[in-house]
Length: 134
Length: 134
DNA sequence: AATATACCCTATCGGGTTAATAGGTTATTA
DNA sequence: TAATAACCTATTAACCCGATAGGGTATATT
Image 1 (cartoon, each protein chain N blue to C red):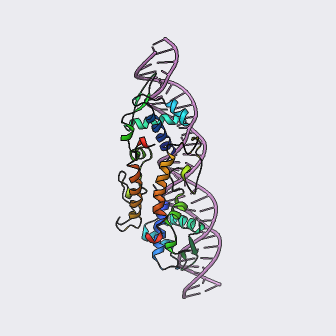
Image 2 (image 1 turned 120 degrees about the horizontal axis):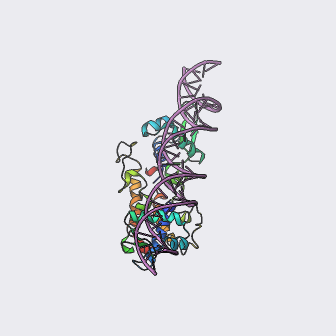
Image 3 (image 1 turned 90 degrees about the vertical axis):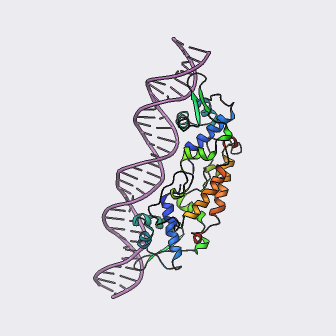
């Protein structure tokens, strides 16, 4: 399961992507249209700004806007930044790798191979899809 | 990411599956060989018993044993019982379905279709694999 | 310059889950 | 009857999740 933060983040980005490119979209507009708590959405969008996906403009007529065209933003990159690792085990993660303390070797591990297969299948989808597919 | 409970559970079941069928395996043996906390493993195996995957025998020579041959136990069923939903969103889950409160309709939802695709790809793997594949 | 707008910042919150640990009880077998 | 090993209850620290609160700051319009 992905977190609500991730779900809201994707919905909000999709909403922004559907507006005219480069024109700031207000948090309040998104929160109303997509039924997301205003304050919670503020946190999420601020996070996406910090991570380099969004730019912002303060004051009247301000809001958040995409820093790259929607078709250049992969779902995989968004999942990683909003939800963390895509892989199901740390020892199988490409971007958040961590060794298992309980295994002697990853070659001998009974789970390793299977979870690599799962990971690759998921990545095959989410690396190819972009914001403009939503 | 799957929980440690799930990881330990799969490793333990795989261990049991590798022993002679029908002969009880002690928690202490599994916990030693697989580097899992004894007490934590007790909880996990008790749970798997309650859910119908394992049988148990008390006293000397006791332990846990599989109730079905390993090749009849799908990874999907184990993931669901240990980790909960496999799908990434409740509105896309086959076994733990829940409607989204923030969406008007699932047809119009920007995320729905994509997460169905992800789900189906994952299921395609874990429904086919069984304990004997580990 | 005043005012409204809208992002920005810090902080706090209850509630829940996770991953254990501790210690005793019961059933079984040799 | 003694050893074994599952079973049961409970408690724990740490962490995360989803959300709320209350202001501060920059910008644009009038």
